[in-house]
Image (cartoon, rainbow, N blue to C red):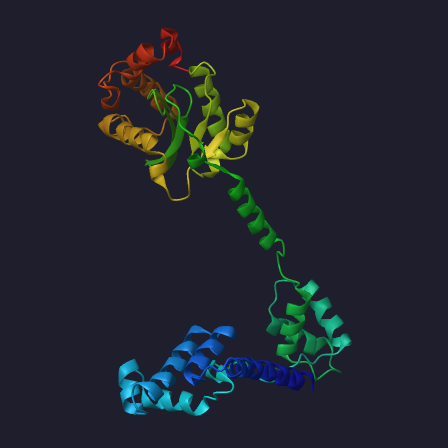
Length: 364
């Protein structure tokens, strides 16, 4: 009864909108153009785009095609059956008849189970948290022989109503992860400065050798191009923390900001050390290697000019010993194109007054 009353009320409001414009035109002695009236009424009622299009069909039928249904269908590219369906359904005193009807069923199946059945199913659900509705239903039938009215669908409804699922905190964990991601400082927020140590770009390379995985963490100064790298046996934030400690010592504690990707090795202990050293940690955007082009180019140089020339080994100590010699060559002797063919040390000594004592720490 309530639903019927609401429908009548809505229909009355729709008719009022139509009558409002008709009465207003009469009072102002304006000739009534029913087609303009339909358009204005559609605007007041905020008809959907498809409904307005159907109204255009009908107006075109009366005004342009001289009531020729075939011409109207060809003009709008619609099938005759579609045209006649909406034409016969149209009511000029209620143009909302051109709206799509809801496809939802008028009557929905109700959840038919008793409080006793509910409590029994909840008990079984908690006891067999990983079981599905069919298994719980079968156990229910064996335990409660006196009840023949419960169905599998009832069991499903009770489970959905109680929201008792295995690992219910999973959704909260995902939301917490998203919150952490949204709280990350992105590199796009940092205004770059031409200063050595202002932004150190850090990344990691994964290498497979003799069936073993080894991890090389790399770093380069965004401006001065001073570079450092070191191999580790594992891919953890403890390794990244150790790398940052060494890097901070090499650069005489002059690191102002660091940039990494979103890898797990640059979280937890690495992040904690950044906070302890008061170094802001900026992240590249997800799937955006172009946010960190300097480290990507250094990684390529490291692979082409060191690893691929027979220096790769799964022995981290031996690899780092060889790598130290190459880093000295890279920083002190190798001309850098973006530095006007100066070496990184020459460039920084010339423009940034880097101490020559920096070289004494390279073997760390």
